Picture (cartoon, rainbow, N blue to C red):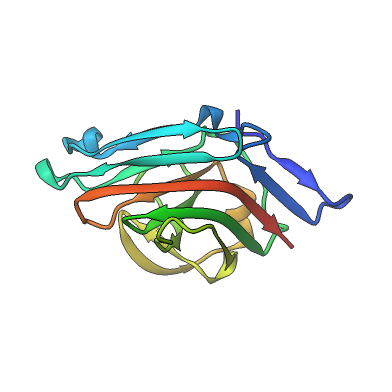
Length: 177
């Protein structure tokens, strides 16, 4: 179950997904390119203060991605405008992904998380400044309140079409008005 902590009173001014304190990442799972014959590998580790996702991307057998995804759960985040992610990473860029449909070929929204050379970084995104991606191709479809009101899953993906290791550690996700 994907739980999150609402903070700052009523109506809530933010939604905090704290991977350490609330053990939110406990039920997150990995989907690699092996579902299509690829050979990429990854693991997820929940620490006392964060969630770590690391692995090795292989381009063999038409591979090239590894993803970490939350369980499906309906979420209405339409009252929020900004997303903050505190993380550190090395070796490759990753993307944070928002989905509102279980079908892989439907649009989703990605937010790039640049590699930080293993230094902690907090990055802020305007949720409405992202274009939808359909099967890896960017579109002109912008994020909408309707899409945010029907979210079913968050996730992280390494899909740069570059072979080699990657690692990211996430402290929290925070949605703000």
